[in-house]
Length: 242
Length: 242
DNA sequence: TCGAGGCATGAATCGATGATACCGCGGCGA
DNA sequence: TCGCCGCGGTATCATCGATTCATGCCTCGA
Image 1 (cartoon, rainbow over the protein chains, first blue to last red):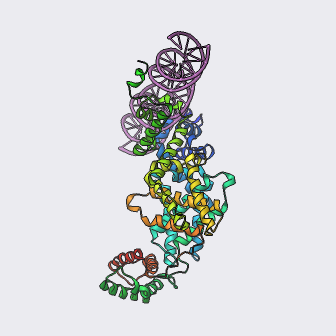
Image 2 (cartoon, rainbow over the protein chains, first blue to last red):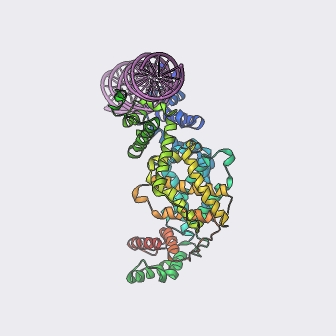
């Protein structure tokens, strides 16, 4: 029997990618059901149907596996929600994005605590980067509509920090302490911190923004007279272009 | 020699309380200098001058020791700052309290991550409770002065959550990403969420329009690549100026 | 002053964890 | 068809948190 020895037990056939997926999902399942401590090489290996050392054929170390679990959980959540942005109302889009981030945390407590509880993990993780990317996209549309009150990266940091604080604080409270108003309060605080009460530009698009900036140009102090002069000419061309 | 055998080595004399303190300070020192992973029973015992099992004569398990370390670090920080509240201006007092909480986090990264990074630890910790107590005191004075906009416990949760998000986000960023404006923005967002103070309406200056135009730049066709490049830099300066 | 009990100390040890070295089998390409 | 790369399994290591047990000091009481 040329292939019997491998098929007769749990491991089963399947390519490398499939085994990798099985390991990740086993780890994610353990993390979700029994918490961070339960995710050991032995427990994951047993749940995935292979021996502990085999895990290291797919992941350099435990941290890499956990990063993969984070990415998997994040992608799964996004796929289930398939939240499409609404270009017509960027402000409501901002709220929806914040809600989405918080909902992810509340739906995956152990995973979220692992991703955003340990400060060192954040930067390198792919899931972290992915979350920031879609956040920056929403912020860009907000900026294009003239709603943004602060610089884009600062806005992203504010949004992220409020969501992070909201989720971790919520998770650390007992049931009787949890007040849904905390989440809405933090969200609205974030909105007022990030956006203007009225958009700074009336007409959408580059032309409208150029007209608005040209009108407000005399107040600025960051540019020299020569720079301002040239900028003014360019703004005129952009405004006429629209 | 009735007491010589105990004095001739590192352990030294002193009561039970002193040994306990030495263990806590050794653990706190290890945590601050080498991070969370370095705090093992063996390392702590070696630094404190006793055998690993002796630690369990003072603490039920590792978690209890870490809780004691948290309390010690928190008390030490508070004693060093000896920040006395200013009854005359409860609003500025609120800001000072928030700043204090954040400064504690930035000054003790590993300790803060341990205290507020793992959601499960929060509730039981004595240091956590102590922080909440002085926070509630400040909130009460705020309420007495008629400044409070929301219920006291909700206010405490908002303050705590914003500080928590601020510190953990700050700690997870690399040096070049850290913008002090993040901390002030979050603090002011907290103030407007908690108090009746109206947010200062900033006039729609050039900064907002500059941000809008920057976001819409890729659409425009009136400028060459070189012109657009320079324009982008100028817009960044104007946006940061606001 | 002397004896007895309590308690901290220290050595040895346990179970479990993350990680590694080595071997054998299989599939894929030359 | 042969050889090689790679995957999984067995055996094993170093270290971690935590426990057990015997020893000896320290204190309290007679």
